Image 1 (cartoon, rainbow, N blue to C red):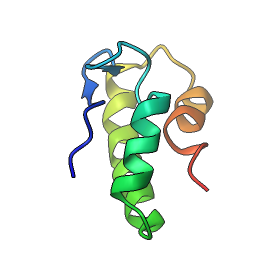
Image 2: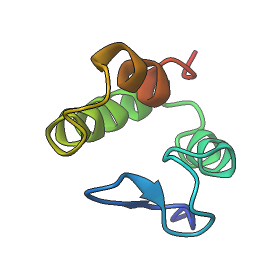
Image 3: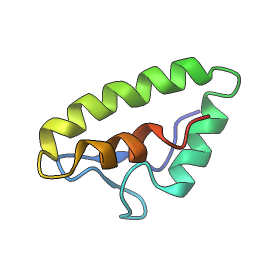
Image 4: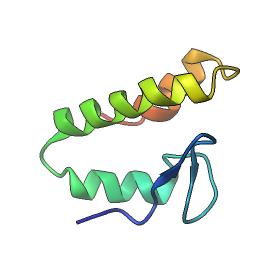
Length: 73
């Protein structure tokens, strides 16, 4: 399964709905795609966070961490 709510860099907005990525629908899709594999989801999102920090250097790191990883439990 591939999510329809994909990030568009360098702005890191959702290519489907335009919200900050990962948007709420994108988060639901990612949870479904990585069902039972939370560690893999966390690794994927951490890798995306590393790239996003380079593109979004003006955004506080704590905000980006919360946005990319704070919702994964």
